Length: 429
Image (cartoon, rainbow, N blue to C red; front, top):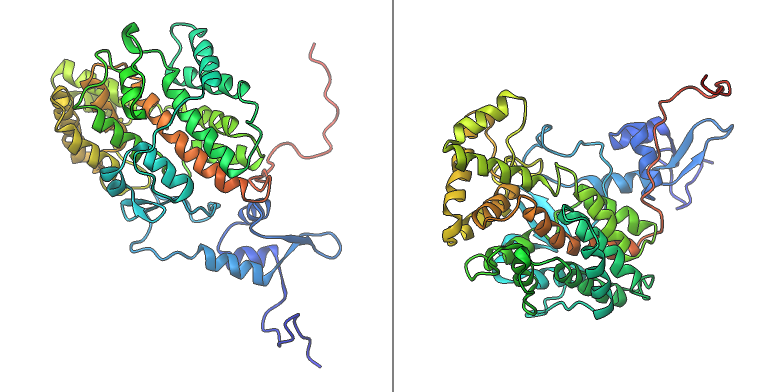
């Protein structure tokens, strides 16, 4: 009698696949296959005799179907994620065809109608709560303010936000409660704490109350919050709240996978955010625009950057073939800010000067730079805005990760060091 599967139907394929067969069926490298195992997407068993591993054919086929997402155009190898990159299922943000969606709703349209707090609630719960405001709890805020005040005067914005996060965590006895309602309460309070703990620009008196956008801008701008700029800040915070699995978001998810509390998740995100190619990229664009305004020529500045082998800040994004939709919206809003007129003209001149050779559109970092240069802010202002905004996304991803199997974000290293059996090292003379 022919052998039967556990479904009591004739088997048309082997019940288990070798590593080579499974990798070929998925179209990935063997090391990527084992990365799938470390993330809980596949299970493996040692082959008889202990050589190699085998994989259930039905599991491999299910993963193959899940990874097959139709695209309207072929991916651009220079700007898209490699085909064998490990994916993490998420229901928060989709980026596709030069647009992006928050839980299925166009993110730009959402930011047109709603503010940052509503966006955060939508990312966290999928519910719209118009007019919601975030308030900092007194004890964590007081601890955060003391920690920020104790830092050296030259400390950067991310230094202050990290210190505020750690201090607020120490003052919150409920930080280890990972139930969804408690995490949401923590998140609302933490975002307000990060905003309110920042020292006001120029030593001005703090302006209490209002939206996160109003309170944050009143702490960044030397002249305080103004009617023209606050709507741009509000839109920027909403647009930047999440952007799929950026480096800082992946770091936050890894922390959440280890069941770190929300403050630690945000600390992990802040650590990754500080790199020059991520959260602080707007500072490079700020300095470039300031130089363009000083020299009066975008062409000369772009030429100098390219001649020295540097990239032009604020241009291009690996997930968009054309202009970053976030930049497009913010540029439109910045047209209504008189103080930003010169910086906006300089940014557009940079795009025109670079477009002849680079053929890339503006990204959100260039728009943030227009906002900060126009308002006379320090170069790090865009990074501050980015970090406060992205806190909402990190918490949204943490909530997803808390619902998954613990420690599933555990990749397996591909060892390429010395072969085992090396002699015991001797002390150097």
